[in-house]
Length: 242
Image 1 (cartoon, one colour):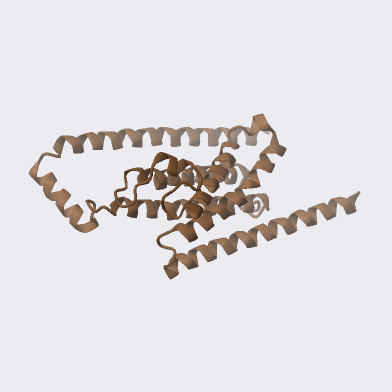
Image 2: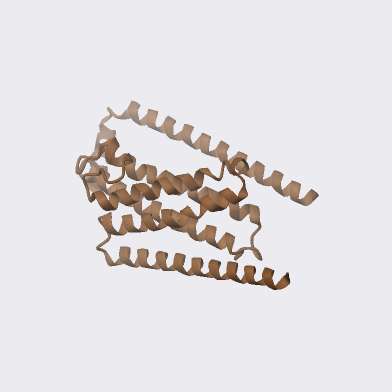
């Protein structure tokens, strides 16, 4: 019991330090932003800006389109990792090597990280000059000007993922059983995200992107099949024990 309490205290300290590090990082970024604003008028800054634009086409009308595509792919990969990790935790795959507190905290962390990249993915569209989106087009399913069906499926998938992630923080209020039932929606959230990315993504015609979607989806199918088989075996064992 003493070891468990000590371990919990260690993890609480780690989480506190991560929060402090995050706050410090935000302050550093704000300070750097303020510094950039102060030196923007300098000739050397203009030269650097011109060089950056020459390398990355930052002033192009498609610049933000590139950002949202990259953020969308990263959000999908993080959501895949979160889903795969969650199934692995439920299947007790990590039990021999990793402690439960670590696997649960990591699952929660990558879920939040995926939502962060989804937020970047959609918010950038508000300022995009290549294909501008309105707030309603982003928040309301099937209201987008670009491939509304597939974008709408992505919006629904995001809402499902957000709901599942919120349950991490209200688990003590809704109970373990409700938590697990709602958590099943993560399968639908991932599936909708995969369909959205494949059908609405600009990079979907690329062979590398198609292989990515195929590999990640097949891994989820395999892990889900393994988890279901394990549950059935556990249920059968309980019936035999009675």
